[in-house]
Image 1 (cartoon, rainbow, N blue to C red):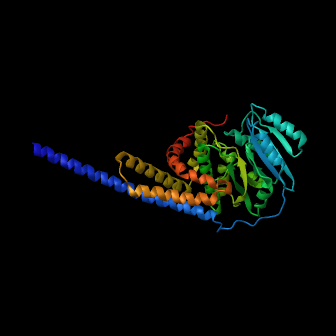
Image 2 (image 1 turned 90 degrees about the horizontal axis):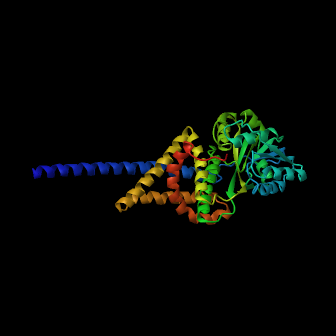
Image 3 (image 1 turned 60 degrees about the horizontal axis):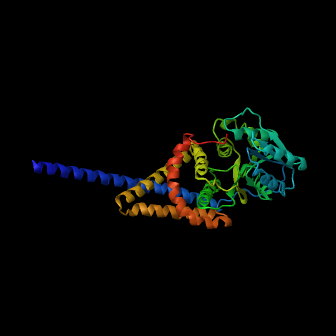
Length: 390
């Protein structure tokens, strides 16, 4: 009887060990495959940043330009934004349209007071009834309707474009170019959390600039963006993306890329400065959830690429938990972690401005925090479990 029990126990252990080994083989295969996808994606972006694919030649035309800003409860930051826009050195016709998106503070008073001394500024008060699901899209649409420029430029009320911003963006609108995107970085940056978020911002910028450089744009920011009025009219404005929360920048860019023959360009020469990242962890989480919510609308090859990257982070997390749980070293998992850090460092180093170089020392911490961000925030953000600015 005892011998029979021992035999059964031995068989069970052997079976369990075999199943465990199969699971480890599956983990290794998944880690290798998804890791190859990740490394290939990073190198693809790196190539897009390398300048091997030259963009359109810069032009010297000076078409009329309208800079459009939607502002909601921005009394603390709007004066700095307006000051930066007033210092633009563009020699062509230039106007600034600021839309007060139902602010509850002194935002409208600031707009009205500035308009009395600056003839190029026009204030617009957003109507109570929103045309689109997203309040900002509705406000921008009203601003565009009130503008007259051939080129529409966009930045946020908490941003400070440099003096050559308009001139530099317009120079990238060569014949056939319908949209020009640019980079924006937070300034100033202080505190560990803000610096980690600033590292993430460099990565997001690399995703945009690198994919634009490869001719398959994946991301852009409304803090530094421009497109032709003709493009806006041809696509019927935001009508096709009006049901989506946010994305007045990324969704419109993807719509243009998919449905138009216009080409797109990226301007790395002029960087817009924005407000520092949220100082409170709760606010930072809400911001990243809003950003992550846009990833669920990728289509085609971009969607499968995103799935591969998601799985890679899942396998990395699985391996890390396994090493901590068993207190054993896994060279495959450790090697993939190091490889991920190495390729990310190369990409971010190429993208970072001189002022951002010192931030890369926080990359190892950002790499660890990015795992739960990808695995959790992507899912939570996709289902809309976040707060929007109401």
